Every structure is written in structure tokens, then in C-alpha cells.
Length: 281
Image (cartoon, rainbow, N blue to C red; front, side, top):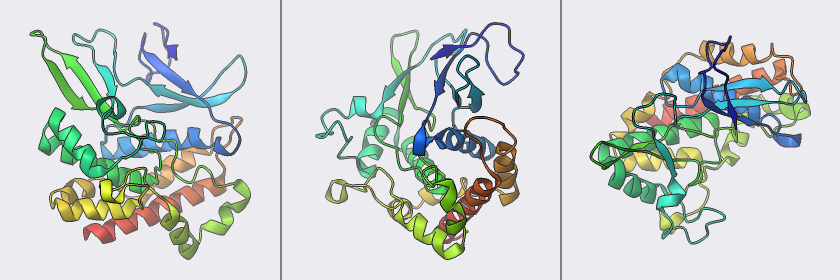
């Protein structure tokens, strides 16, 4: 955790605010890029994703991602605190280490209690579609939650927290040497088909479930969920190309190669096409 200085030359940083400097090594090293690209995609779509920036520790030369805290902003009249999903599901999670059972229907029920039915459904529809778009496999109960503020009368007000912690996505684990072998359409479809969301649908089908199966089941159960999901796929692929190509210009210890930019662009495009087909776009 870092606190930004009061005097800043970077306009995208907030003076006297808290940030996380997250690093990754070995086969997970490209998670830092996944965080940044997921944020940039989310920002382009108007989604609540915490700002993330590539950063370098000047003392050690270690590269990582600087993640803006999405609560506790300087001068906030009513500061929020973060309550993880796991914190309000203690009686439900029999396996707390693995965060299971973890089912969408349960998450909807819990979220509805705190923020209302409409906001709960909208948030989870967008979250599932966004996770499907980037291939996020790690939306466990500590990677979603609520921001809680206490008003002047002492009443707690809840809202869904932003879509935080998106690093386990966008093919981060794919070795550089294998990228060229996965870019073709049939191989991309095979790779995407192996991906799993952390959530299941209900207690009867608890366990990591294919992203698009969860989106489909939510859409079938709640017709209005499709409207929210469609907001996640209304972008031009030129926007994705611009985002990933910009990443190739950074000279850091974990570079983002031209080949990886091609791979991530093709991957997001293929995932978007699957969502479009499912939603009738």
C-alpha cells in the first residue's frame, strides 16, 4: 500500500490517496497487464473498474500495477468501508478457504437484501458479461462486495463495490512461445471453452462453470439481464487494438509484446462474438 504525495506531476493520480502496488512473477507475470487492460476496457465501456496503471519501483526496478483504492478518498464527507462478499456469507460458505459454495442465485439473493433487486440484478449481469469478455476466472467471494457508508442518522447505506481484481484474465498464463499457436479461430474457441468462472449457478450445480453458460442461465432466468449484458459488448474492436497496442510501448521488466497484443485482441474479439450470439446482438 502506498500513499501518493501531495505534489504530483501525473494528472491521473490523486494527491494524498491510497494505492496498491501489485506485482506478479513467473508464469503469472502478465497479470499486471491484464489488470491495466481490463481497466482500460472497463473505462471505455463506462463500467465501474478501479483505475490501474503500469508502474515501476524506482528502488528495485520491479514492475507492477498501481491500483487506485476505490474508497477512502481525501475529503470525503462520509467515507466508505469495503465489505467483501465473503464477510456477509459466513453462514453460507462451508469451505471458506475455497470460497464455496459460491453460486450466482445465492449472490443475487444476498446482494438484493443490501442494495435492492434491480441494482443487484444489474450489477451481476454486468459482472458476468464483463468476466466473460475478459475471461476472468477469479471472481471469488473476496473479489466482490459492498461499499458501506453511515449517514448522519447512523443508518448504513450499501452499494455494490466496483469490479475490482481482474488480473486473472486475458490469457495471462499463456507462455510467449505458445501465443502464435492459439490465435487461429478454432484454437481460440477451444481455449475459451476451457475457461471457467469461479461461480456456479446454484447449490445443485456449484462449481466453476463456463462463463457463457452462466450468462445464458441468468438471461433465461431474468429477461432484463440481457439488456444490462449488452452494454458490455457495445464497442468497436479498434478501441481494443488501440488499448493493447499502447501497452507494447512500455519498456519494463515484463514487456507486452506485439504478438501478445495480437493474441489479446483476437481473444477479446472472439469472446465478444460469443456474447453477441448469445444475446442476439
